[in-house]
Amino acid sequence: MNNAPMTYFQDEDVLYLAISEGQEANSVELYPNVTAELNDKDELIGLEILEASTFVRDYILETAQVKLLNLHHAKPTQMNPGKIQSSL
Image (cartoon, rainbow, N blue to C red):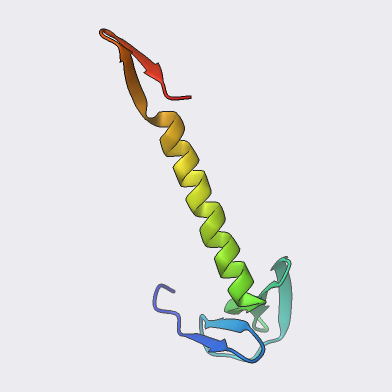
């Protein structure tokens, strides 16, 4: 699945990840604008992301903010010799 081919349809702002070949028999909305496409055995064959540019932008920003927040709270600073305090 790491090498899933991706197709971006710029006019529609849709990103499609093809997991495996097969006909879509069913679909499940995982999140708003993110749909899992399933074959007749309910196996994942693709993911469709509507409003993909917004989805990717928001995901990257949220992930970066969480990581930076975690780094900020985890990084100790030395304010007094011999005593380490959190940088809150």
